[in-house]
Length: 239
Length: 375
Image 1 (cartoon, chains in turn orange, yellow):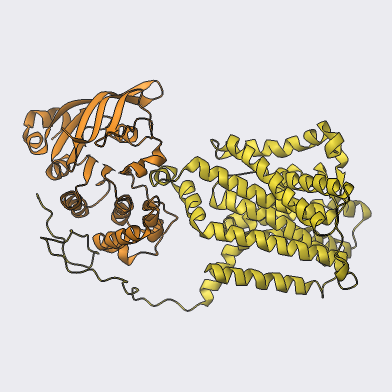
Image 2 (spheres, rainbow over the protein chains, first blue to last red; image 1 turned 45 degrees about the vertical axis):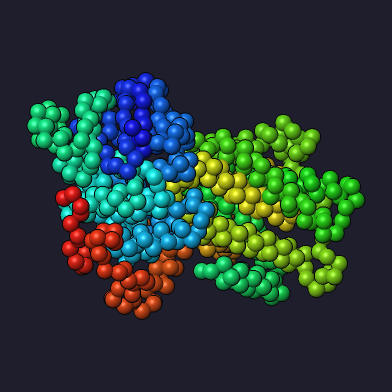
């Protein structure tokens, strides 16, 4: 399988306490993979480990291109085509919408392409276009989420990681954002790794689903199959 | 404000202040030079603490590094027979360089610290200064410090301007230069990086900014500005000693930045003015009162500290954005209210075609979104 992202035997945690135990995961290029699980399952730790915020104590993390990400510092990730929309949105509240977006395209040498991406981002997120000069702290929760996603897209990533994009958002906005991910995947071949508490929405939009429980993968199969597995849903996902 | 406007404003301010020296008394010119020296140190703090969020209590030590670098290089050059503009410019450059090198060393060590830990670490620099000057007294002059051979007024200006006015000219030009450079940095790419790192270091790192490198760079720039302030102070007072760069002075610099408006370079100007003007005004006021000699002696020097402290408390309570924040607010009230209508959109997106165009998220007043594929 030509993975957009391949994790092999990844163990990581905080201090001497491991949270992830030998995770093996392959995210196919151009697919949306949803990682679901209860609180404390290790979902956010997984994203923190992939993006270099946490160093794995064992195992390897590679891109589909073969690039080893295991020791790449977090600030270098964007240069390798990895972008993360962190939990809590991660907007720079002191900067304006435009400054936040430009920050996303910071590493890009081609200014013309970055400018075109900025225009496209405003087209994708109309509310942001209307509030270009507004500071991050003046935005609503939904607008902040759009801004965080727009900033990540400004980096023209090959792999987009999202941590709880629906957190605190109205179902309508969540549906819009998840729908847009799917459209971006179709249009640009973007690979998406999605962490989501809202299991129904996540499995609806995803191609592949992974259930994480206490730091271990307990199920990994097509998202539609996972959504129909009543026993699994009752045991690990609570619905 | 555009860069060109900023340069024009800086040039106008320099010309105005230099022109002012022709009409103000010599002592006021001397005070203007001191204000400009302090301003460099406070402006450095504005960048480091205001924009960068790194609380430093060691700015006086970095100004001292500038002053001593100035003194050592000026005296060495004078001993070697140097004179003219070189005896002025090279020591000033040495002051900036010396403080920047110390700032780099401190920044490398302090890069992992923040909040009270960084404040404590930087405070140790100021506390250690007298011990350092005593230990290396053969070079640094111990508690007495160093007397400096300074380049006097240029021959062409003698008879036209006083020594104090010349000192003010030099200090005005240097401080305007420092302020303009810092303003360019704060309003440019580096400023955005610095605010991003302060506000959300993880998001900044994910965007490709190296938070540690940004913080260290801020430390070096702030130190270089403090070095210029120390150099100017050394030139103006013709001395460099540990007594002038105490912990109290370091705290005053931080207080001036807060009172003026932390994060604003214009606020730094108000802070520097207050730092110099307040003791003088209080001293003038008390001298006009018929106080007993004992009380007058007790008030001398102490009253200014008390008043400055009271001003700080009032500002923190009533105007957290400082004097500059108050002025901006007052200015905003005088301006007519903006039009209620939304600004026109700069680009009108083409109507989406579900087959070809990407889905977009409309503004709340727009139409309902297209149903995403797969749902």
